[in-house]
Amino acid sequence: MNNYKIASRGAVIGICVYLMLALIKLITASIFKASSLQADGLNNLSDIIASSAVWIGLHLSKKPADHNHKFGHERYEIISSFIVSLLMFTIGFQVILAGTQQLISKEYSQTSPHVLLATVFSIIVLTLTKSYLKKLAVQSNSVGLKATAKDMQGDLLISISTLLGSLSVTWGFPIVDTFLSIIVGIMIIFSAFEVFKESTFTLSDGFDPETLLTYEKCILTHPDVIAINAIRARMATQQVYLDVTIALDPKMSVQKSHRITEEIEALLQEQFKIKDIDIHVEPYE
Image (cartoon, rainbow, N blue to C red; front, side, top):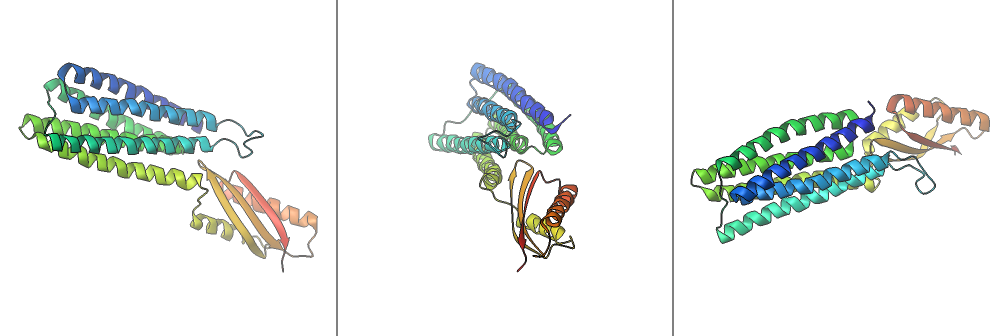
């Protein structure tokens, strides 16, 4: 199974899991008047949008290059990851706001055995699904699926907070539920920032300087390369596009210099699996 199919399967699984959990939580919360579980269910509804964005991004990223997108459409997956980070920020702030409002109004959540059962079920399902999605994300090198797994980690924390909060209400300490929700909101914002930073770094053509240095060292192992005048790279998902300007003997023929560029391309492809390499030759001065 290719990477696209693996990542696409993960995104669809995420959508189905979130839909199931949202229905269970919202129905249970409506019957037993559990505001914390209702908020958790609404959060899962927004996660359906996030997982759908990842699935759409994966689908669009596989479109071949055209006259408007000469480098292909791979960055649609990065855009979907960026969208997920924004939704995670929104959820985190909403959780903090709801907790703060409860502290001010002192109107704490209620609970029941059915709410506890729904929350425990949610924790089990999210734990298993998150582990599976992380495995698929590693197999497929999917940035969007990694973002979904991190988003699901935040949802797991919310469900754990809901469970602990419900238990604290049962034991006569409802304020603990509120403090836990605020802490979870802060943790979700931190996770959102990680996804946001990674996606914006790639979208703004950021590239690891250490990796560039590794490419330089590899190119300089060719005996005919005198110097590297310029080198730059950018990424689209896990695909690397590399532009290099090398300096060769000014007396070298065009035919030989072209052969050298082909040898360097083959060397880089063999060692680093770079998708696209553009090598420009200049006479050494």
